[in-house]
Image (cartoon, rainbow, N blue to C red):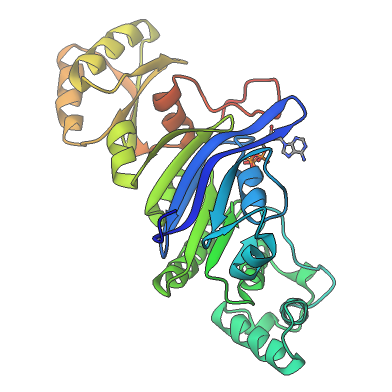
Amino acid sequence: MSHDNAIETEGLTKNFGDLIAVDRVDLNARAGTVLGVLGPNGAGKTTIVRMLATLSEPTAGTARVGGFDIVRDAPHVRTLIGLTGQFAGVDELLTGEENLRFIGRLLGMPTRDAKARARELLAEFNLSDAADKAAKAYSGGMRRRLDLAASLVGRPRILFLDEPTTGLDPRARGELWGLVRSLVADGTTVLLTTQYLEEADQLADDIAVIDHGTVIATGTPTQLKAKIGGQTLRIQPEDPAQLEAVGALVAERFGDLEPLVEAGAVTVGVNDDAIMPVLAADLRERGIGLTEFHLGLSSLDEVFLTLTGHRAEDNETESETDR
Ligand SMILES: Nc1ncnc2c1ncn2[C@@H]1O[C@H](COP(=O)(O)OP(=O)(O)OP(=O)(O)O)[C@@H](O)[C@H]1O
Ligand SMILES: [Mg+2]
């Protein structure tokens, strides 16, 4: 293992009966950076995090966290890490401050230190005013901040954040991103799981895309976006009969990225928006009227489409979801 890697997995695998939830996953997170693990529902993100946080043992493969083996040296790993789970881990009935103090006591801090650390974190996370309110009275954004604060009581060098911003509004999401950035600036290593390409793009130094338990792409955000197009162009012709013609034109103009012709529209990944006016002129010249000509950030769904040729399916349900 390289000393630069705070997290390193090799062939990490987890089976649940016949289901291979995590399948020979190799990941590296360099110390002091953010590794983004991007994948749809049921891809295996939480299962990976739970193994790395020593909450469940791998079926096969190995992993080291902070240089320690997650099975043989599990107690030592636990002293180095913090975990903010996908589902809130705070006690509803305790106040914000009580929650943090309680964790400090569990970590073996003297009462006074636990109290001081709780106060400090509440201030840092803008929760001082709510310190004496029961956690059940917190808003979603406050809950997420308290969750994150709870995982930081022991000043972990390595932090696991499992979908930390799911369900937050854009402002609360932005605030949480700011908190993560400041932790990383202080030298913390973060493994962050997310379903949002935008979030991985904003925070991660490196991204691993997973699908059905396997890593299907890795790279920096820039490398990944070059491969998949950071943005997606969606074109809907007024006349559905012209869909194929639009598809052919887009294929011709875009060369390396394959457009998808589906559900009355053509979508394609875009790396360079200079193509937009050219394409608009082409369409106009051919007399193709449009109801939609829209450039937006690529969603996870579009990333998957480009990488796998299929939409990100929800592994937990049999039916095709359209999100
Ligand atoms: N304890 C378990 N027993 C049986 N199957 C499980 C268990 N935990 C997870 N799974 C299955 O393993 C697969 C991966 O689940 P996991 O929770 O790791 O996905 P995820 O990427 O975190 O998804 P989400 O985005 O919905 O949180 C899913 O098919 C899930 O149903
Ligand atoms: Mg999960």
